[in-house]
Image (cartoon, rainbow, N blue to C red; front, side, top):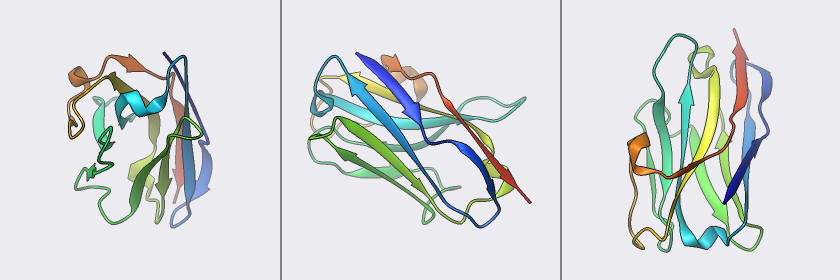
Length: 126
């Protein structure tokens, strides 16, 4: 599978961005998926996850209520809608997938995922 993230850019604090992750090689419905981010000088951290079949969603406390993860399996695409952005949201955002995960499977750990996109940079100015 190949994951291609896009949609990053420069935005002012309080603004919004929508990230997309295009899945190719296999139907996205085969994967449990998530978003992670890594800020300069910091470790990669979990942002959000969505289950393969039930489409239940899970969020890091730092983004809960501001970010929304969703998927459109018809378009083989994962999304991350980011609202009320803060300077501390500045990071490279990467999408991740785990093939044939259980229908309700999700993980907040990067080690739970098998495949990764290349990342897209989000910069939030104050």
